[in-house]
Length: 321
Ligand code: UT7
Image (cartoon, rainbow, N blue to C red; front, side, top):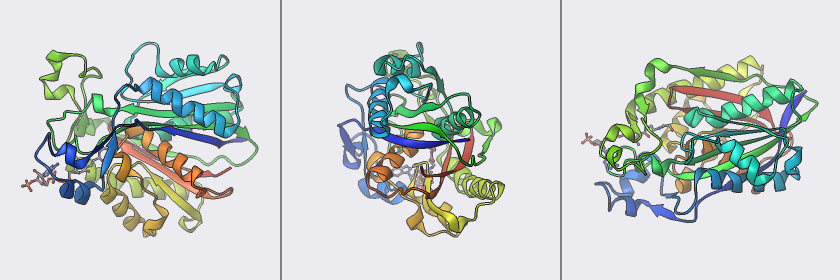
């Protein structure tokens, strides 16, 4: 028994902030941001919230997978930026969808979160515990961003992506995942409520703070390692992999990973040009775009890999349903 993705959906706020707008807030330029990160624009919430975006992406995924809300047994929302603490975002999604039979919880693992949500749902489905799962990555990173820090504010964006998974006969591939809390200082954020707490807004520690170079070096070393690990664990050759769907943090990271794996860059789709880094939403949004544009075909073997704060990193292999 295993689990396959049968529907996807995504949501991006309608407000688009380009690099020139960022250059009005900090000393930077469109040219520098494009060259160093690949990012040209990012979507930023106005009226939307982490909960509302999760709901929109989830509705689209259920429609796409032709799954009724009452059929959903499990809802996992991966987020580090929910607008509410209680109830959890997943329960809010349940309420909005009317998914009355679902067990719901949130998962916090930053940019590795969607891969870990997938692995968690897969374990439940392949273990026969549940039949249908809804996994969502939803982030309002603009609420956690220090718009005076050019080392971080150029990178991040808001959005949500979702996937519906069904239990199905077939092979379950084992994931490879790791964490290193000892290196957690490389990327921190002390509160989720910088946007509503004027006192805290004065203290940079309450926003996302990052040692960009350390995170960059960690990613280009650990992501190829964990991809090789997941392939060898499952005895899958890299020639069999049609797509590597990586967390969308920086085009130079994706290019460096492709090079280290000695795989063509064409196997590494990117959409960070439009969205920036949306943390746990990034892989889910990219999966949805790839499905909608017909690039994912039944039987395609795909690697998903996430990496980020914690530090956390992980990869998983799946066969498209
Ligand atoms: O989701 C996972 C978490 N995050 C990541 O994966 C991010 C990983 N890191 C990165 O993407 C990159 O490290 C950054 C894009 C954040 C920075 O790029 P970099 O090539 O590592 O730049 P740097 O920090 O080494 O800075 C190079 C120069 C410095 O000037 P000097 O000292 O050489 O004169 C910086 O002060 O660029 C300067 N700089 C900027 N200049 C214009 C740093 N940020 C900017 C900026 N605009 N926004």
